[in-house]
Length: 553
Image (cartoon, rainbow, N blue to C red; front, top):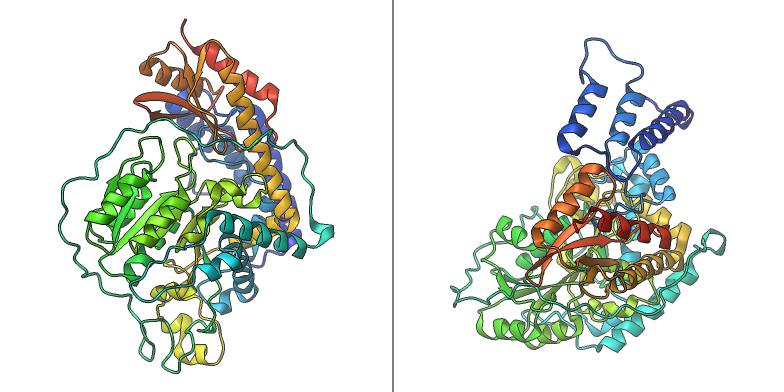
């Protein structure tokens, strides 16, 4: 059925009214009453999902009920998770994506969308791997390291140059200057202890029996046709970094492990005790050897323990570092980890799902020095990118690594179609049907420009510094440490862990505040992850007052 834009107008008015009335009915960052009460109200409002006869008011009824029962990431007291308020421009762009309903598994389902995605991924890859850094970290001979020998200062300088070029390329009339103050100073690296993990007893020799990705007749396993051209129509001599659009950090991490496994069969994952749970889970899913966990005694990966593991464990190795831990927003010592990977001929992946947004900020980008040393980098723009879910990216330094994803399905990428010049999109993901999620990201980048997005990053980091200062000067609260990005951990000074947990649950049940929890240094902490640039000083003071008033004296 044809749904031209005019047909959407009246329906959009219904949705906007339902969003407004539902938000008003909720009255806070979370619906009150707890899980059972929220579920009961929704069931009552919705009634039968599949009635015998349709309901003309269903759009308003269901949208309003869902809104009333939703967590509201735009509310300044909704701070539990890496759950951002999406930018209006991105939300509007997502409407266009839904209306056009393109699918990026074949060119004839996404003629322009496939080109837009390519433009976007190359831009984000260049931001992650600046040209100077990419040249310094050119792919080595087989079996050699894929880490760079470039210094942290060189990588940071190259990032500055590339970001400036990208900003100049933006049209002046589309750049938006966002308001707000910048941080008073760069946040220092966090400290404090995660429980110390053991490198473990000697592990069995890695068994390289995973094989390689299936490939089509008439192609090589490196993803080229027998005539030497790429099956996706790209130039095999092109060594510019590339990127894939994913559903988020979990899929990006899984793809990073898959590319490492296919590049070096038998690869063993080594990660810190602070790493995201999706990494060891991906190793299990891919049938890789059991991962090795090295200590993170200060909340970040311990380089000395990593050196020990790389020295004594049989390779090949994939080291996964983190730029922005989920619990505290800490960043592993990336330059030192990159140096160790180079020394031990190990491949490096960096999970920057949270911290990758710092690339847009002149003030905070230096915290990511060493990022360009990685073979792959996970980014997640529905965190510090203010995108509607989902908006994940996997940046890949050597585009030839992507040949492992090549797959042939005659109805989508027949050999003769590819030879005739129709782009082959099937090797851009493990998924078949894919939304044109590139549009909302591209609209955001084009509208705000790098400096505009960087200003939003600066604002939330500044709010985190301000909140930490507020906590540190409050006699009844204890601050875990100064924030590295925009996550602040704190707790009532005399409370037990059970009391901290109870305070959080009370605020959730009352619908007054959404705070997270993190266990670090052997104690339970309340977690505020500040991703709303509009949060003000008064909002932060009110949040602290809510916690104080809920804590038993």
